[in-house]
Image 1 (cartoon, helix red, strand yellow):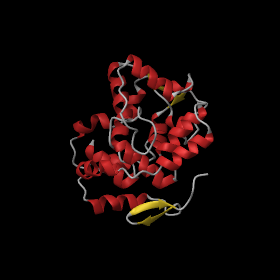
Image 2 (cartoon, one colour):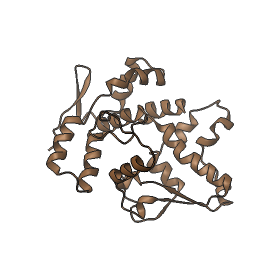
Image 3 (cartoon, one colour):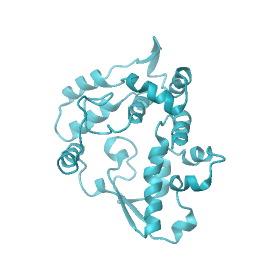
Length: 245
């Protein structure tokens, strides 16, 4: 997992690439092993949070969609970088072969296709019935405290999203709140200006240890992926050359 995440970070600007791969490959492997024919994932993040809408009106999707959209077309390259690793150790990080799939019925879908996806409602259900605990303070780079709060790498993922595209986790969360009618655009603008683009200083020591990098190498990876049409460097940090309005 750590090696996949490191390669994903350096080669794709995607700091938890191995983790996301496992969510897809492990579930499919397990389903095939136990004869499960229908897999429900939660929300289609591309449709719900901004991205490709090619599956918006389609109930089923396939492994090629996962590879091209969720894994950003880099799956074969990243997995191929694990030369010398025992294939048995990679079993749950590899998709089944075409031959394996041809012998099984397998259907993939998202729950959000059949029911409107409401992250806040889901949070309340998880809190009441599943023991979910919020953080006492807000999550890194946003104003919410109940989602993606179980791993440090998501803060880096959101920061890289900001450096690549000019919008961060606060923009993503504010969009959700606006769409469900819980926030006005003006309120969202204030929160985005306050929180977006937070450099996850509080996790830097964790990142350097996890990726086995020094600060210079880590900063070099960030610089490789930053959109220099949107940002310029000042005092060691990337600052936006735009203003959200």
